[in-house]
Amino acid sequence: MLGTERNIIFANEYKKKGIDMDHTMKLEADKMRIVRAIVNIDNESLLKKVKEQLHGVLNLNEEKTVLPEKDSDEYITKGIRESLKEYNKVRKGKTQSRPVEDLLNEL
Image 1 (tube, one colour):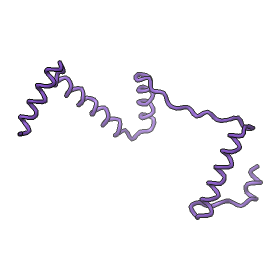
Image 2 (image 1 turned 30 degrees about the horizontal axis):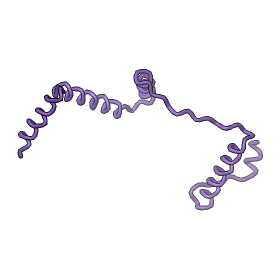
Image 3 (image 1 turned 45 degrees about the vertical axis):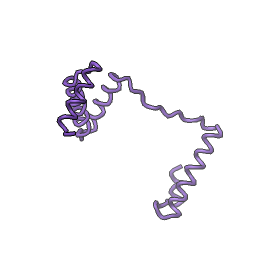
Image 4 (image 1 turned 120 degrees about the horizontal axis):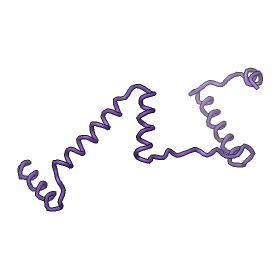
């Protein structure tokens, strides 16, 4: 089956289902132009504006991080885990630590 014949068969199937191929193709092309335009944005403030508009129009909700209370077990456990991860990075040479004197002076 040639490509043209196959396209005619697909077009006939769309017609049977009541789908207008021209409209569908135009809609898909418009969506791709919008995606391409967003992907090509290099300006952070412009991207932020586009993002805000899309959130408003499409009702997109970002996941909000809920921080645990400072005296909760979850908060303490999370702090210990992060400290151990940082320690392992220092031990493996992926990052450097700072002298304890600098830390104490900062406090």
